[in-house]
Amino acid sequence: MNKKVDSLISEQNGIKTKILEERINQATETITNQSSMISSFGTLYTVITIILAFIGVVLPILTYQFGIKPSRDALKEFEEKSETKFNTFLKERRVKEFDNAIENLKSEDNQVRTNGLNFLTFNIHYGFNKNQILKILEIISNTNDESFSDQLLHCISQERNEDLKKYYLRYLQTTTYKPGATIYYCLTFLSYYNYNEYKNELKTYISNDNGFSTFLTACSHLCKNNDFIDLLNDKSIIDNLSLESLAYFHGTDLGIHHINNWKLNEGVYKTTYLYEKLKEKFTPVN
Image 1 (cartoon, rainbow, N blue to C red):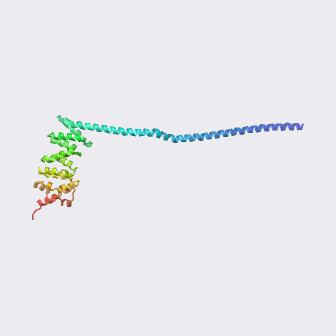
Image 2 (image 1 turned 180 degrees about the vertical axis):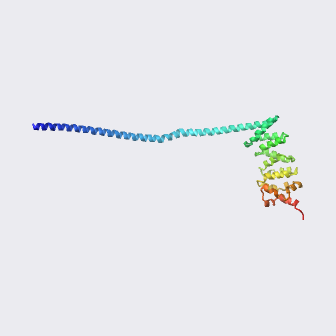
Image 3 (image 1 turned 45 degrees about the horizontal axis):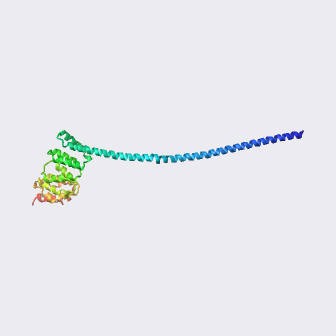
């Protein structure tokens, strides 16, 4: 009996051990499967993370290269072309406005002429083209209104223009001196050129009047460049000054009182032909 009981107990323990082993094996397989699955998820997560990071870096670059940059370049090109076209439009419009104002100068209606003159005066800084200067010079030549002419000369005398230069040279050769702004604008304009280009015409003009006012005006415009010394040494000019002009110029100190306005050194002034001429005429004989 005891043996049977021990046998049954042994048999039952064997069954329990077998069942336990099977469960342990099942648990081990389950854990292994779960670990494998978790590892796969980790690998997948890593891959997805790398892909997302790659997209995060590459996508902005691609967006800039194929989206933003072309758009920016196109916008810049558009702005440049638009600005060029707009500036061209403004320039063409301004030319038309100047042309209209110049046409108004020919009107017999005084108000229309005044409006045209005012427009040109207030817009001098934009400048005039060659054709416009020719038209204005033609208007000046056909009017007897000196004030009107002077105002027109004021408008165009800041331009470097050969037709205007010829007009002023002709003016110096053919006009007898008379007070007014014309000679001022003439010498202002010519002072932009080399003195040798107009000194003969200036000599002719000075010989047609007492010369003092013209000479002094020329000095005031030339005192900022080297031509000024040439003028003070120009015998053909200074010898055409009348004794009355020289006396007025001399004052009481052989013209030295002028050198401050001319910004000229006294020593340099005393080497000029003008000073020698004044010294010759007005130094008392002992």
